[in-house]
Structure formats: structure tokens, C-alpha cells
Length: 213
Ligand SMILES: Nc1nc2c(ncn2[C@@H]2O[C@H](COP(=O)(O)OP(=O)(O)OP(=O)(O)O)[C@@H](O)[C@H]2O)c(=O)[nH]1
Ligand SMILES: [Mg+2]
Figure 1 (cartoon, helix red, strand yellow):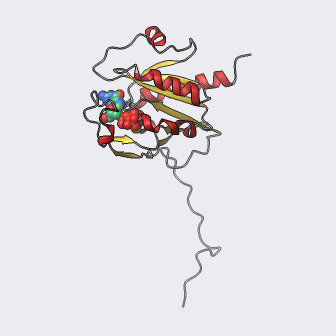
Figure 2: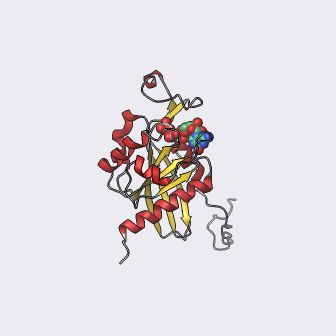
Figure 3: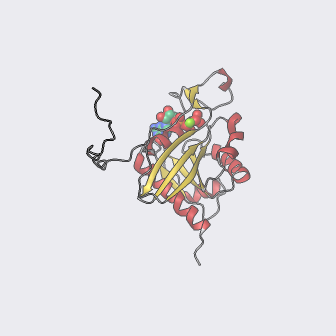
């Protein structure tokens, strides 16, 4: 006749799951999570940055660049760029066994900058990425962040191969940054340097929230 029901008392217990690399679920050791906003001008490397650090397959909203971009978005230094973020990027990184960061990336085209304030809701820190070849674009981005986002920020200079490194004191002056605002160099395509930028931001955000006695 029929076979025994699968939940019969004689069924052996399932073996424990083998430990492995971070999967889709947050590790049991994680006690705190924090939301981080990743912002920057058009094509500075936000999507690349989140893609290189995320331990889960990042959520992307890439669409082909259309003629509406002509004369508006600076594609001169981005010959291989054929798509752009139209809503957001999302990724996750477990920074240490007890802390995971949720990364929300903004769209870079200026007609989408109104979305930033909504995406920033609940963020504890903002990573402002600037393109080492187009520093001037960072000025408007910082203005937008200071006006519409109430969270501490750090600046990550995404270093493209055809530019010399910028001394941080000159950069601080050029972008009119406060003395305590962290500046870090990174390569958005390189995981280690991108993680280092997030660590600098996390440390800064914690210092601002919990100032030393
Ligand atoms: N060589 C080099 N190329 C980079 C680096 N970061 C990004 N790129 C390239 O620059 C282009 C733009 O990168 P994206 O990550 O799409 O930039 P984005 O800021 O997300 O762009 P939008 O969403 O359109 O604003 C891509 O072709 C990347 O491969 C970098 O550090 N070095
Ligand atoms: Mg993007």
C-alpha cells in the first residue's frame, strides 16, 4: 500500500549544514547591520564598487544609455560605457563577524539625483566616490549630500590608470572638505581597496555617532 509518512519518528535527523563562504543569508554571528549609501557623479564607478565588494550577487538596474544623455552626461572619458544605473544598486558585505553592511548605490545621471534623499533614509554613512580624472564633478555631489543627506560621509577617490595620485591636502582644499572628513584612494574594481574605503567610512561614522568621552 502507501509508504510511511516522511515525518515518521524513525526518520534520521538532517545533518548540520557545512560551514562555507558567505551565502545569500546573513551569518549567525552578525549582531549589527548598517545601511551605507554609495553616491557619486555619472560614471565614477558606483556600480563597479558595489559589484567588487558584495558577497551576494548585487542587484543592479542598468539600462542602455540613450540619446537623452547626449550633451548632458560626460561620456568623453568613458568610451566603453554603454549602460547606466536608473534606480539603484544593492549589495551586502560582512565587514567583520558581527557587522554586516547593506550597500545602496545611487544613480549618477543628474536627472535622477532627486532619488538620493529617499535612498538615504536610515543610512548611517555615505561613501562619496569621485573619479580621479574628473574631480570637479565631486563638488556638486558633495553639495547634494550635505544638503539632502543627514549622515556622516567619507570620500573615496576611484583611481583610474591614466591619472597621477592626488595629494590629500590639495584634494581637501579643492573639494572644501572639513579636516575630519576621511579621504581614501581606491580602485572600484579591486575588492581589497574598496573594502578599505568602507572600513574608513564605518570607523568615521562610529566616531561621529559615539564621540570619544
Ligand atoms: N580602469 C578602471 N575602470 C573603472 C574603475 N571603476 C569603474 N571603471 C569603469 O568605469 C565605467 C563606469 O563604471 P560604473 O560602475 O558603471 O559607474 P557608475 O558610477 O555606476 O555609473 P552610473 O550609474 O551611470 O552613474 C565602467 O566601464 C567601469 O568598468 C576603475 O577603478 N578603474
Ligand atoms: Mg551605476
